[in-house]
Image 1: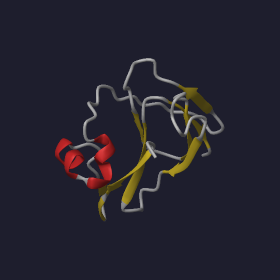
Image 2 (image 1 turned 90 degrees about the horizontal axis):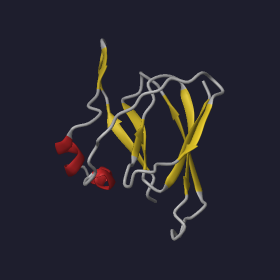
Image 3 (image 1 turned 30 degrees about the vertical axis):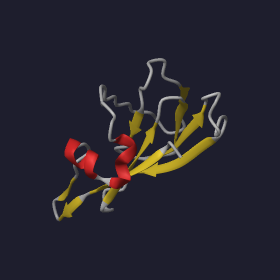
Length: 124
């Protein structure tokens, strides 16, 4: 239950779309994003990987370093595994297919909290 799918609205017209990826006031007032309400975002990373690449499973050694992942092109399978020994979901994995589609009016991102091993498989 700690791994969250975040769905963001795209404002689309004949030119393309505009989307707010992060806005603090929307974050704290959106009931679907309550898991992110008290998070302090301190770092943003970006990577590009070729088709077939597997990245992970990575863990974070810095306490409370959560991840929010989105894709800008292609398709991935995202994997999160609970590695918290005292967790009732210890050892369980969650997978989510994320696919970039500029024609849909939303974008999905995934939030993976600290205490989970995380990785991706690039499908396309």
